[in-house]
Length: 110
Image (cartoon, rainbow, N blue to C red):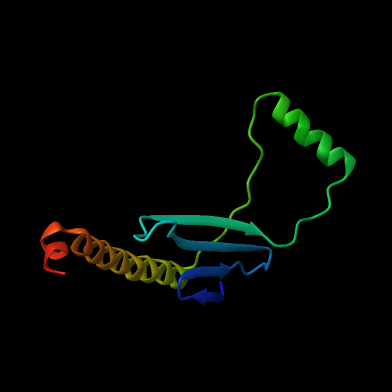
């Protein structure tokens, strides 16, 4: 999978160019704590009436719809591991900095 971006968010495009794997850090607060992993379908195929009817029938029977797969090569797996390791290190540093800023001992010195 060719890498689209790997700074704050890792985007890997599937070789079929139909899917993108996105891994990003959830930074809603000052200290990022979670990772968001998404699979995007870039080229949805138009569904026929019968395809839609089959999907509805599958759901009515209480079964799950099939999901697409994203194949990861060993080189891509290494990129994912490197990205996650780098982001975890940054998250830990930001958490430590946040704890230092919020500590009472350092607040009284300012």
